[in-house]
Length: 372
Image 1: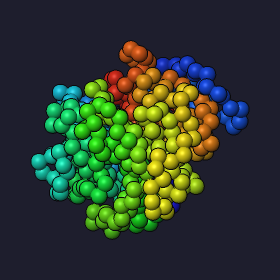
Image 2: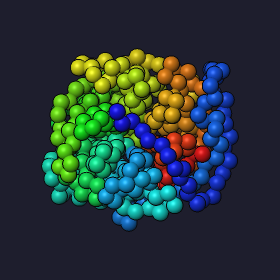
Image 3: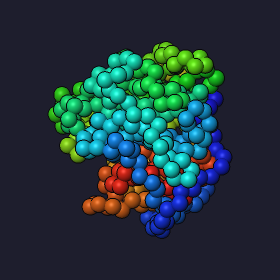
């Protein structure tokens, strides 16, 4: 079962700044937290490509050299266009170990191989499957406002950045974040969706966000074939927002025991869906493992090597480490730009190829920064 690979470390030549660690709420004595080893943020390169896209959202560390994807580099999706309109970004950029940035793909909404209701606005939902198949979510708008948001799709690109197919319908409705697991030719995508009645709600909370498990089969150079789609989570709070476009269930990570953890952003908590790989029904919003404390609108999520959860806050620029038992064991501020400090700057995060540092997007500066 393919979850994560770690090897050579990465570095970006940039100015380094020190970090100040905050005392976590309800600190639990035990094995040293992963975040306790990380004390420096290195500002990274701009993720703005030639067409001016902004607001980097999704991140994924590339595990193997295949096609135009390079091992150890980080793939980043952009949500906004050059005019800074949300839900209109069309580019994926690749940040190399030496800090060089190249455009992996520029997606033309008018020339897709299949339907994608509303067009293209690339979200945090981003992964790379064996063979270099890139899957990225689209939650598009016509003018950057939630009123024009449409269902979108999952876009499947080959190893050279060409869109080969789209996955649409079957519960895909505003795909917001995603994780994946692969075994041989079989992969499962776990996708959060945030547009189920949200636009019609006009800013009111609508408890209809979902998590889908989408089964795929790959066959050499042929695009992955979509199999069963199962709703394994439902009833998550979601709402539109004038600043953030939409707020709903975001980060997802699959634990070693098959539990899927979800950053449930609106109620400020992390929940757990058991038997995510095998269940054939919905667990609702799952079991709450932690809420409040140092969480402050959790968004992106990833796992540490020992299985702790790392989430970044939307409201204060902090990264929080939580054990699978729900103990918040560490918190650090990794962005202090803006007022209040760090609010709105964080979204996607991923471990480096060596699994001993954290790449994270800085939406305040449109950069990919490194916590090490």
